Length: 276
Image (cartoon, rainbow, N blue to C red; front, side, top):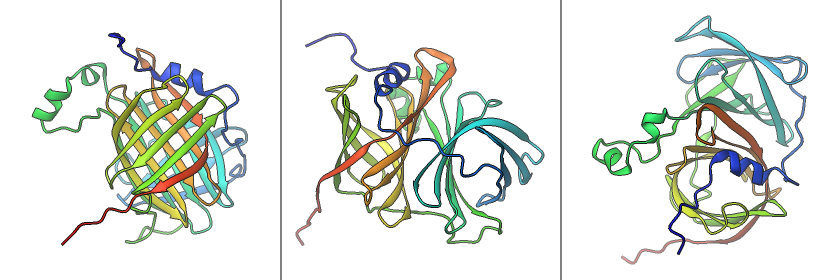
């Protein structure tokens, strides 16, 4: 057995995923649109999509009112009227934002992921347990929002357990393939079948939201190498779109935020039975 670590830094993972990848093409469908997003925490954030890959966000109401910035973004469309928008917040260290924008229902989900500091990354797992913290040092916030009208309870996308029990194989490219087993509402297991992480496997914290029938927003947070995976899974189309973000190697001042997309194949589904 090799006594050296086989864990791969995010920069190396990005390089492995890049050639011949199955990502969706970026779209400019949102160009010229201004979306007033009423968040469930009281924020009103205006998103203005300019030409090219530029957007401006501005907090109109709520904590931080008046803050604004113009960022470079990417957008993909997995189903008509439903978009995955992603950008790095240039003014906040280690922070990226992913938006699921559903123009069919004028609802959405915002996911903000923040990478840990060097010191937080280096804290031992046992110390995190003793301190009552999660094993993953990656912080993740979810906000539901409505577009154009004030948020009311029940709007946005709801937490779901519809993926739980499924075993799905994802082909990211001819040379990168993974398997996911969705264990329960909080955890999933993954293993790399083919690619730069071949043979590696782990069980990590995760989050599931239902966007539409057989369409899900899935986010995981890894604990060994600080990483967040943020994807939309379409089990009708058997396709995904999204991104993986983490530090670029051991440089704690630079993020590697790269797109991913895969073809999906549902291998089986487990339903647990409990005897009375």
